[in-house]
Image (cartoon, rainbow, N blue to C red):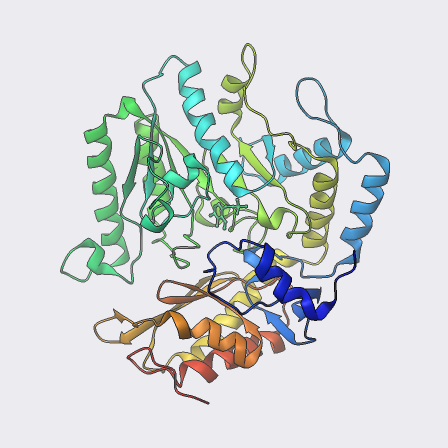
Length: 455
Ligand code: PLP
């Protein structure tokens, strides 16, 4: 069946359920092709991708090297299971590579097909680890409000937004949410403005109190994104993770880093764990591991955890596509590209450039409260009043990111009251400037009421 390009939007409306899109919405943007940071839709309109798809297109679109690798591997061995004693050379090659990149002692790898599956596996691993060690009472998972850990019932329960729970209850029991680290919003911590170190003091006190309430012997793990992505690129104070790690260690609680967004160069290191100088027990990754060319996730598991999971009959859960030969082949080729093109250093350098450009073009606008970034994760916080930091009122039918895309073709996303950016790491400086100008063009017409004046 060949579809007429003119009918695509109508057929989409008739047949596809899109996440987070109301049935009443008529607009569709049907992407046809991509190259570098540029995309073209079915109407021939061009776009500049400042979100990296969904925060993952590290090496950019249209890399035919990766298509060639997938083709060659499909022709050789498209799939065989990785359950039991079976394996394949591509999964082994990638696991060996990941073990060499990860902080010691995380030298074991468990494959999934994405981030949500990864967090399900991590939460189950944490509980199972304690169970096998004779501490079956350790079932609780500590998480944070504003966290996003995917849409499974485990990770989804750890996710800290009511929107993701409403109508899906009952969620998984034994999950407790802590306050997120967000130094800009010190009202989360009381009436007085606090320094970043005082924010950490507050959060560590809360953590200790929560552990005491639940009982340390009942807690399996704490899960957290090193930098909260969906929550709005929330960067914690530098001492937050080291101090959290110290508290958890004292109580025998595992630390799971959800690095589905932050790994593979996004923050200028292979893993944000290295950026913060903290070694978790499990790191969950996905997205950038293949730059999105094929679905894949990988958990990096500490040797001390793996040793327990692998006792007796081994770890009793596996996804059909665990260690998929095509996905792992593409991942290795993608990591080769990241390495060969120096994209870790580029994320740091270009991230600083884009941040400075945003600061120069938007820094003085009355609706811009803060610009924050680490590497190529950036956010522009929108406010009604810079002095009080009151959030900008939002109008769902005319959101700034939608207006920016419709008027300029630059694709950014919203996260509550911020605009978030995570462009491909290969973006040029000229493109970064174009992104900043597109934001300025709309935000300078944005009133404190949230209304956007016509151009
Ligand atoms: N964890 C984090 C931090 C994420 O940002 C996401 C997706 O955006 C997920 C987990 C879920 O990953 P997936 O959509 O691949 O299931």
